[in-house]
Picture (cartoon, rainbow, N blue to C red):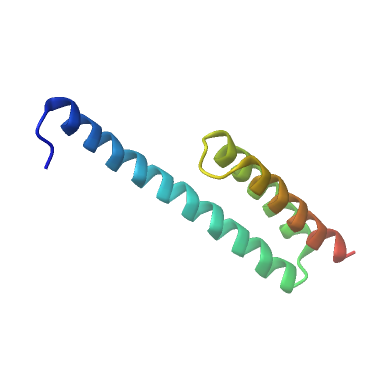
Length: 87
């Protein structure tokens, strides 16, 4: 247990941050899986809309430091290639 006021506050901040990061990472993974199932079902229009959402989430996560920028860029590239392969 924290002994000082500042350590107590830091603990509260860490808990909030961890919960926020977990929720954002979970939302990101859920949308990626949603996109991949749409690709498997060959639903091109819906997959296109979902890809835009995933790209936005990846950019936001990279901006907040949740994932690295190269990871976000690589994921967007891979997902867009999967979408283009449907054509």
